[in-house]
Amino acid sequence: MSEEVQLYMDDAKDKMNKALVHLESELLKIRAGKASPAMLAGVMVDYYGSRVPITQVANVNTQDARTLVIQPWEKKLIDALEKAVFAANLGLTPVNNGEVIRISIPPLTEERRQGLVKQVKHEGENAKVSIRNARREAIEEIKKLQKQGIPEDEIKKAEEDMQKTTDHFSKKVEEVLQKKEAEIMVV
Image (cartoon, rainbow, N blue to C red; front, top):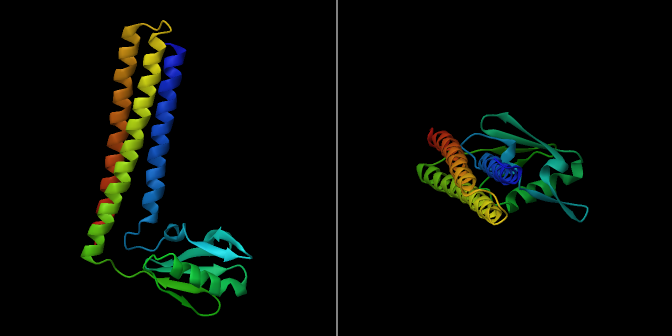
């Protein structure tokens, strides 16, 4: 296989892998009934006039399977942290004791579990679309190479390989989704 064709195929594989990694990071944010510091990853706090991620102004840890603990680095930030968690609209209620903020994670209702499964499937579909787009872009670029003298049989072989790679990554996405759905549905 020519160097240019391989370059486009490697680029597509890289994009597909990034889509899979992004899916996994997005799924970490979806809670499955267990406390996880990743649940607060998107929470932004007002800190001296700037909006910064909560992890840059406080330690976020799990005390047990159903409790998150936020310990601010500066005591005067505790009210801002509490407001930020409320404002994030995560369905969580922070409890401020003046030193740390504790967040009890309520058990998921069946209806909420179904909603989370839909959200997981939506994220999975986004990942699959990214994977298919990477395949399409690579095949378009490889077909352009035919005009530059790359043999047609090499183009066909590259397309077949690209499809196999796409199928491989789509299967990985399905495996990740099934694992997360099973995790969510466990009572």
